[in-house]
Length: 210
Image 1 (cartoon, rainbow, N blue to C red):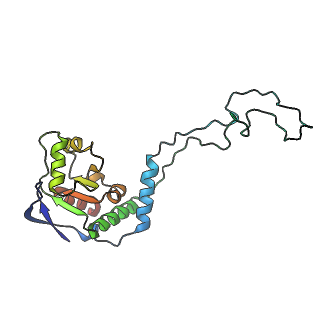
Image 2 (image 1 turned 45 degrees about the horizontal axis):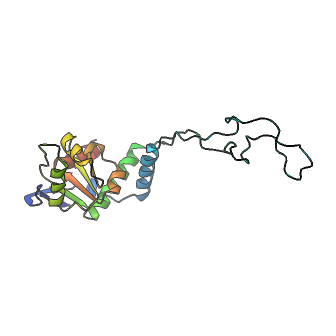
């Protein structure tokens, strides 16, 4: 699959980049995508939630009422979950939500997500995306030139660029990452992928290197 390379003004440069079918043209595996996205979201959870159970709250241990003869159920403690201010029954406890996935499965998931984006024509390749200063206004102007200002966009750089990252981080519908850190969730969450030209070769080295 070939794509025309455009510049930051939105005009074609005359160059073309070939998207490798081993990355952008495989048979997608939906279940692999599901597992990888599930793991990504699970790993974001802190798992610090905690509710006090009846053994952990401070309330009187005096018996509320006599055992028999009241016509109601017996009650021996104000710590019971049945009473207002009592302990929580089977409340949440701190836990680790993360789980392991094999590296090959995660690669398959990411390649499947990239394939879907290629089929949907959701990939744009831009040449020489550089910024001289940290200015959100200048970054927004580039997105406008590329007709991506109204789309949720994932910008994929060949290497980390602090100027571009800091210029974009205040924009809700934009995210900047590197080809080495590209993951399935970010690909699926974006409407359009904007590859800076060198990032395609970084992806090839990451996924196809033996």
